[in-house]
Image 1 (cartoon, rainbow, N blue to C red):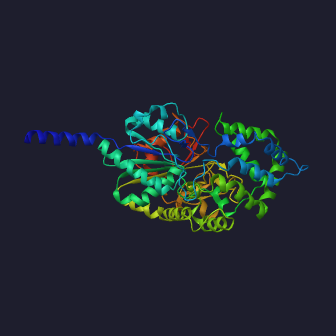
Image 2 (tube, rainbow, N blue to C red):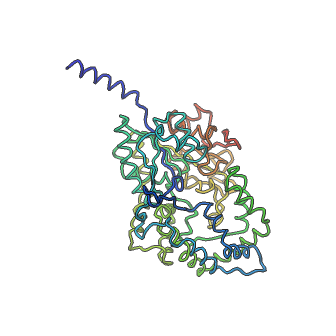
Image 3 (cartoon, rainbow, N blue to C red):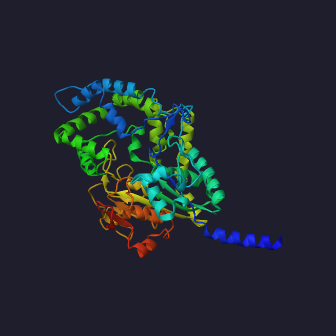
Length: 485
């Protein structure tokens, strides 16, 4: 008996040494379908906020006729009519959460798994891009049996999702025998990782945190919650030019080409008309009340994309126009997450002190979305580079840094970024000319992310440079081959 126990103990130790650290990919907004009547024969996918819904809206004759008027100076558009039509379209849409920021009964996801990707090949084996494509890349390079995905309802509070992620981590560790896991937070998944780190860092269950194009510090387009709505001709044309060549063959590219085909002059006229609309407090309130509130006014996940320094203004404006109830549960949730944002720097310091590695990947090279006063920002097509990087100093799009900001070892060779002010200046990488989460499978860019996720190299600019000859500032060509800026 004693011999058997000793042999078993020794074999168990040997086995434990062979256990790879499981990698869990946490996706972002829109990457996982949400359903109503989950688990029943009436299960159906809920329409969200994608280009498909925008395209669908243009099939409404009344809306199309008003939209066409926006392209002309001769015809007077009726903004109230536009808001009414949009409001009728979105009212009752199951995408919105209830007044407490919770899913309606029967809503949710149908693919929460605590089992590895080797059990769910249909989820990733044909994916070539975005979070699923990245999951595929990691599965191919690290082994599908060592790769997991955390699927969740991304509309809800990031702290609630973090609680579920914690349960999954415990389950994966128990099933695999691994002491720790590695987490890859993509887009809004970065906010979930931040919330997880805030609540569960003392458990020391994570070996590596990799934030990829993360939203933990917010997205400047959500300044609209603070009433910051601004459209300019220059901003619109710059954005269209920047986005037209992105994602070859995608719906996005087609729509951008159609818009450009309308003609620069007509697009400029439309931008002027929208700018006029945005100047009116009455129009902005009408848009909020008739469209935003019934469509996604209760979606907590979108509220939690408000930048940390914009939060107070957003609360004040949204309360004033009737979008947010400061006595309600949604406000309590987003206020609590706002505190999580404020804790990020000290949380990173804590986990690093206790042995975890932390890194950030932030993309740049696209002009800002032209709907707020921050349309001159450098973004990755969605998230502003300053926010995604955790505080880098970034020059306005089309310009370069000057003075003391343009000097030092953390300044990019193209004089666009100074990484010195990042939360992680020595383990934050900037990739130029790849849009938000558009890393394509089997490219150098996708493999670079996968190698970091799998722990193939230490999370430091110095180590990556030594092993892969890549500096802190990297550029991608049309095939996503990487080279130094």
